[in-house]
Length: 126
Image 1 (cartoon, one colour):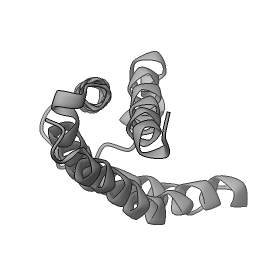
Image 2 (cartoon, helix red, strand yellow):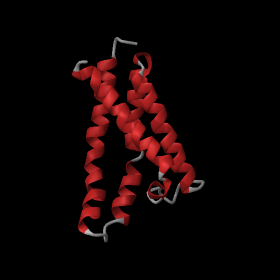
Image 3 (tube, one colour):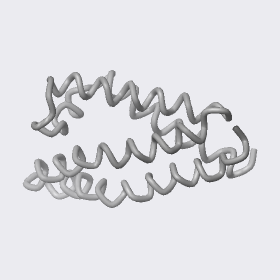
Image 4 (cartoon, helix red, strand yellow):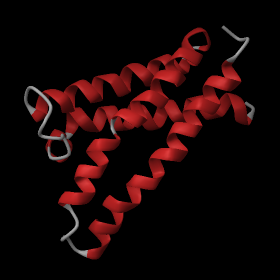
């Protein structure tokens, strides 16, 4: 399996793992939901987990890969406010936790670029 074939599957694995975590241990995710959103934080936790699972499934299929990869890039942009909220909320925690929260912020860009790269490599294969 080539690197370009492996990349969408690795991204799908990352999304599937995160999606499962949203259902298995929702409380930490609930705390990252910005307060301005309608509904309960738990609803948003489950919706985002379901979205991650759907995106992961879409990335595994050649015919849906490009659309799923573009949607994944948009998803990563869309969840950025939750990461900002987490960093703000954790700014007074011990250094390792604070570092993890703030470290997530710049990681969003490579994730967006990874998803866009998967979409670009999927061209002509649908």
